[in-house]
Image (cartoon, rainbow, N blue to C red; front, side, top):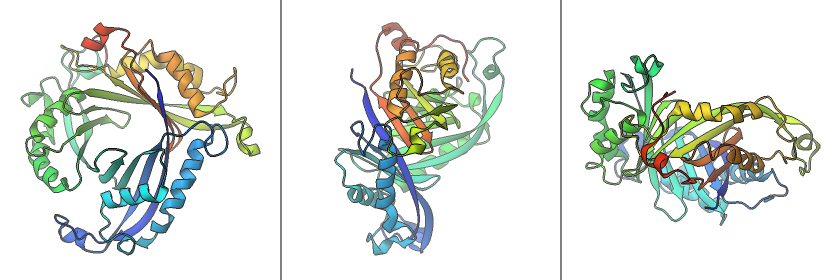
Length: 364
């Protein structure tokens, strides 16, 4: 299976608007403002924008130029009804790039819209609840077997215009989960993040038929996604390293410099019949540890590497693919919002592991 590479960039803008469509309510109809953020992904060829390693920076510059007319603007003077979806569509048009794959718009920390090439516009909403839980099947003495708690966050993707329907359907579910012990709720006796995604999906899908994904953030660095059929998890890892971009046109980037990198490891597999998870977060961290040791506090440009994001992604993939057979994506960011991702990675080399998930060990 070929590995797809996408480059990522982000840019923000401050703007005011009034919303006049159905379901916007009195608050939306009043003039108000947001700190908006646009995140884009594009399938760019190596060296796009001038040199290998500079693709994401040039994409970020293009995005910043595209949103400049929106910065400190009254958006109704630009778009008749500047909803989140209309803004995402406007940014896609302003960029006018055939390579563009996605525009993800934040109108705040809990709401936004996503335009994806070849798909319908989606709205997303994010909510928080505080709960306790324990995982009853982990090995004796493991910390997740003890009663503990999280500030869970859950994000929903629905058709544009279904936000009010989602909010009404979510309210009673939120009251059931908030300030509760999840193990005491029927169907959540083994409340892994995957089981929680599925449980929430089952309670909302009849009232919100356009629901396409439920994402549970167990912590800031790990979580799970369920789309009605497929389970995915991710685990974020960070490392502090030096690099240099040999083909850069400027001396600063040709010279040794450094970043705090964030790597998001994405995996997909059916639920383990007993453990109720796809792949153990703890296994991901443990199996990645030898690779992490070669990255953290090291010069990434030595040993023949070009030191750019794509070279690093290919190197990381080669190191971890056989250790993590459920691996389906790698995302690498050297600054917030600016980076590259590799998808289409599942090897399928071990059908039994794909069928049953990881062995029962740990969960952090």
